[in-house]
Length: 53
Image (cartoon, rainbow, N blue to C red; front, side):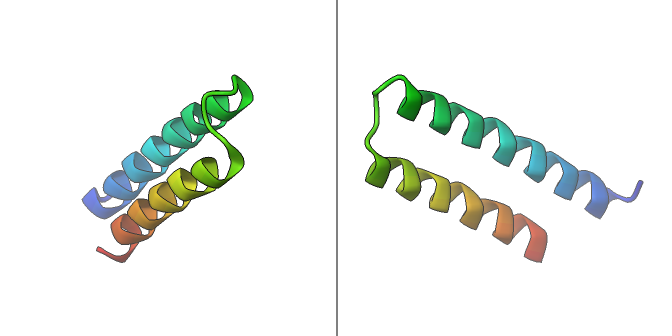
């Protein structure tokens, strides 16, 4: 595995962990749908940035 593949795999793992945490907060009633989508969009942007590097 190359360094780029490792970096991307790390970014994907981070995204999945953060997305799971975001969904958990929503399901527990700590965040509304708009806030949840906003946080997920931010995580997706971070993942996209890592992919483009």
